[in-house]
Length: 221
Image 1 (cartoon, rainbow, N blue to C red):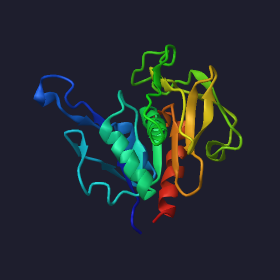
Image 2 (spheres, rainbow, N blue to C red):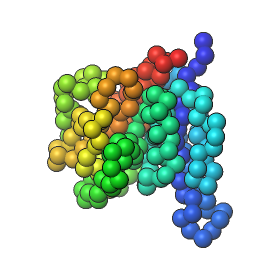
Image 3 (cartoon, rainbow, N blue to C red):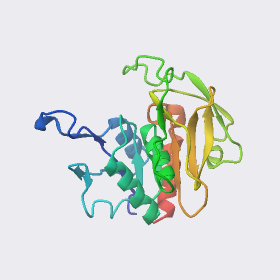
Image 4 (spheres, rainbow, N blue to C red):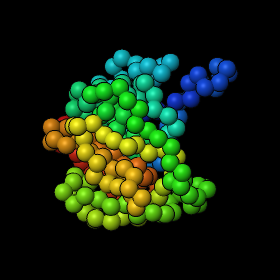
């Protein structure tokens, strides 16, 4: 049986300094590991000069938008490609923020990302990146609730920014204890596009989120 191929969007360090040898793209091992553990093939989506390379998205069954430091044009372009081709998308941390930005920009040009103190409360090291530090609340009528099946969860919090709205085709389905957006989802059933602000890739208790995502991608074969 053909294995499912899950694309991972790169984090860009292109043109951040005057050193041309510092222009590179990064892929987190934690995401790759979760894809492999759940029986799928990770595909590291290549870009060139922060532009999509034609044809590189033709054979992916789903795409993960991982955490990172800034929303890039190529990330929004990949999100648009996934939307138009109905490719399932899972956005994590910055990936969720990218999804929210895309959802708003479908209707208006507006920046919706803001700084948020207190949402990176611990120094994250290799031996404590799975620490949970605050409570999230999940809307019971949401798609996220159908996956997680809990109204309250404890999550890690490793981000300096949050989003303050989503477009009309999406809804907010998870909020933090201090009322910040921590989970969003596409409203209708013709596409699977969902995002979360926390990092399930380092929380073993949420590994099933990746299994669920890969199963969704299998249905689209």
